[in-house]
Each structure stands twice: as C-alpha cells, then as structure tokens.
Image (tube, rainbow, N blue to C red; front, side):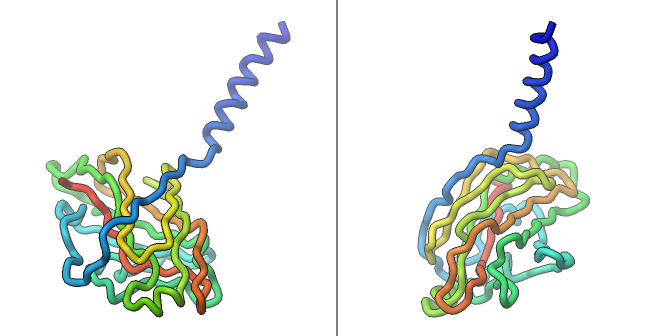
Length: 194
C-alpha cells in the first residue's frame, strides 16, 4: 500500500525537477571578421520588421535601435555602475502578420560582442560571456560567447514565428572591460525567413 502512494509522489517530484531545470547550454561559433561595408545582409528582416526593447532590472522597458541598425559604429552599453547582468533584450515581432508569413522560421542569431568601433573601445568595455534565450517568455537555451571581436553565430532548431510572438536575450555573465565593467553589444541579427 505504501508503494502505491510513493510512486505518484516520486513521479511528481521528478516532473517538478525537470520543469525547473536550466535550459541546455551551447557555444556560439566565432565566424568571419566584422566589415562595416557588409552590414545589413539577409536575415529575419527579409520577412518582416522587428523591434528591440531593453529592460534593465528595476526599470521600465525602453526601445533601443542600436542593436539592429546595420552599423558597427554604434553599440548598446550597460548603464553606468552596472555590469549588465540581468538586462533583458526583447525582440518584438509584428502583432499582425499576413497569412503567408505565419510560421516564418527563426533559426538563429548573429552577434557582435562589445563596442566594435575600435580595438581600444572593445578592450575598455565588457562583453557578454553567457546569455539565456527565451521564446514567449519561456527559457529555451543558454549560450556562451567567446571573448572575440568577430561575428559570433548561434543556430538552433527552427521556431515557427506567429504574430505577436517575442524572443528575449538575457545577459547572465560578462567579460569585464579594462575601464568599464559593463557589457556592451554592437549588433544582434536574428536569422530566419529563408
């Protein structure tokens, strides 16, 4: 009789543990050098425009344009006196999509870590070491990034985007800069559509 009571409790505990487990971790691949003249290639933007909001812990969400402006000369930097850990960038997809764009595949992202504009600024500011990705506010993947000034590329299984969906990128760890502890990101490009 006690065995019958024990089994459901064990199954419930195992289920709860699996739900609370952290997502799996993958490493972004260091790719080609960043060339300003080649910024703005094909991406999810080929299907539809998307925006970015930044949310600093304890603050209100605010639109940020420098993360997807096709320029290696501009960068988002963590607020003064912070490292950027806990900051979340939310990629906002259109609330309405034509029927033929419902289910557009999203399969990765490319990132320029740090302030790319000059080698001195790149060394001075921090860079993202680890981040967590969320889709519709559910964590699905942790990503570790190299401390590199080149493009870093992450691929994941296709996510079929629907109107009103969101994807978020939360900074978990930072490589400190020589002069500023806070992380910086020059560009994030969502890959998909094709």
